[in-house]
Each structure stands twice: as C-alpha cells, then as structure tokens.
Image 1 (cartoon, rainbow, N blue to C red):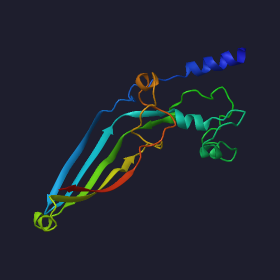
Image 2 (tube, rainbow, N blue to C red):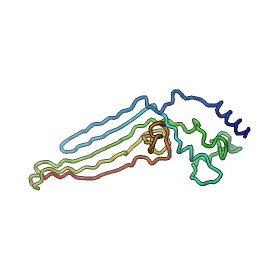
Image 3 (cartoon, helix red, strand yellow):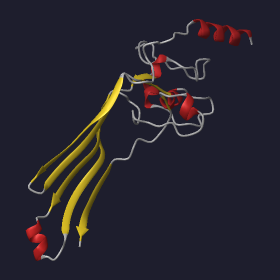
Image 4 (cartoon, rainbow, N blue to C red):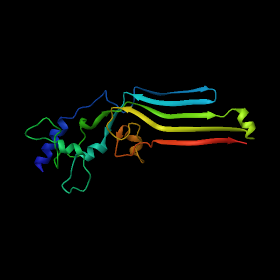
Length: 191
C-alpha cells in the first residue's frame, strides 16, 4: 500500500497543464462552390478546422495490456523498449502507469476534408422534348472522399458516442468508427 501511495504521489508531482493544447480549434469553416457549363455541373464542399488537440483514449487503451490479455493491443507494443534500443516506445505493461493520462496520446486534430463532391449532367431540353420527358439529370455524388490530417486515429472529426461524456469531455476520442465514405449514382427524372 505504501509503494502504491508513493507511486501515485510521484505521478501527481509530475503533472503538467498544457494551456496551449485545447480541444477547441483556433478557427474552422468550409469552402463550397458550384461550376456549371453546358449542362455539366460540378459542386464541392470542403470543411476544415485548425488548432485543436485530441486526446485519444482508444489508442491509450490499446497500448496498455492487462494481465488477463482479454483485449486487442496496438502493434506499437512490438516496438517496446529493448536493451538494444532503449529510446523506443516504453512498454508499460501491468504497471502503475497503466490507464494514466499521458501526453504520449495527445495529437494535433487539425484537418481538411472533402465532405462532398457532385458531378452531374442535365440533358438539354431539345432532347427531352423528343423523348417526351420534362427533365433528366444524372449524377454521381461522393461523401467523405478525402481527409488530410496528422491525426493517427480513425477520424479527426469524431463524435463522442453518447451520455454525459459527449458534452463534458470534448477532444477526447475513444475507439470509434470513422465517418463512412460513400459514392452514390442517381438520376432525377421530371415528367
């Protein structure tokens, strides 16, 4: 018990507050536009944010192994400390540091994402009259096609699952699925 108390005291004495690494971005926004030429239409939406930081509890969980081995682990554990290479990622297996917050899992959450891209063609009225159709537009639409980020987790634009944690712990990611990349083909037919 005294050793545990001493370890907790040592950990508490080494805490540091990062005032410049908040979960809130310095700025964020989007850029959208639509180009049309002779029935061809191209539209896009890019969204971005800069200056926010993400603490990834999901990656943290995958880097600390319990003695029961009842969980998946990160492949980074294979790069743990060795006598030949002591500068590698420390292997903190079943230690008092297991589950403690560390700046090791703090990442820049800035990103630029192509949220939407649509390419469409509107058939001319002359052709529509011959086919006795009011209008015909064919299109291909893609969502979440590209993301540029340094964040190593699943998705820098994550949403906390639910409950109180969704509101009181912004910038803390867990093991979540990234947003789905979709490609849709369709047509709009007017009679």
